[in-house]
Image 1 (tube, rainbow, N blue to C red):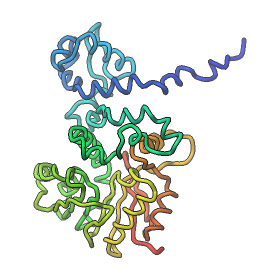
Image 2: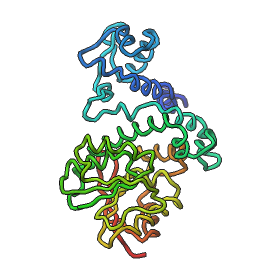
Image 3: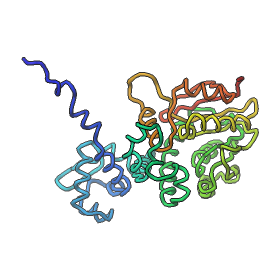
Image 4: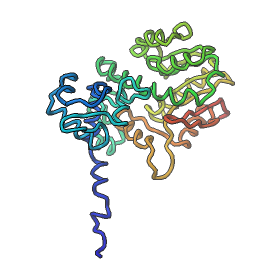
Length: 339
């Protein structure tokens, strides 16, 4: 028997799958179209799905057939498609819906296509492509900013479900959510713990939508909303401060500035809860390693190892007390420390 060829030893099919960008884009397009929502009563002919989603039937069939071969949807008979367990996660009303998280963000994609620029220079391709930073772009492109906000709201709901029961939030009477978007995360915490009062801090454009979110959660009377800049100041003397998916958007120098601002606001007994990915050592897959490249291309920020976090915290006069693992983001419990 002859030895396996170099091609056979190299797992070419797996490499091709890793290099594919058609399936990810197709998945996001179908998620945005809300196709799964039209299949809750069982499989349907593609013609009906096309009419319901305002699409071209032959084109939609080609897209669904591609996803079906990856286990997302199933072709129950020629030209008819139904849900699979993976496709159910695209349902808008699913308890852990991924539909909003899997939206297509063309402005991100345009930058990621130019990833080679970032790898060669170490600079964000987003600025190279769009001529401005990630955050200033949204200030001038309102529709894209709203699309990004919806994506973050969907992601935040998923994170909230995983972290709400993993930390003793009720020990904190007052929580400041620094860069907390439209308040989805903070509203969820306050709804679960009637003893907590909150303060939401973010840019004026972002917090403009907070009243609707807080009212819907029934917590508006326990949450102040402040339009501010976390590079300048945050409210003083709270029991807890939250930085959720904030530090990874920024370089070490900028992240340290944010941490020092928060440290200046903290009492000796205050806690800082950082919700960010932590890169583990070794070759094992971890989503943090993928997100790290995304941050390189989009914002110029980075994901960090535990050692990276400890160095930043030490420089800001803080110390890592413990890391609480969850199904999504770990919670870094940070306390005031000595320099």
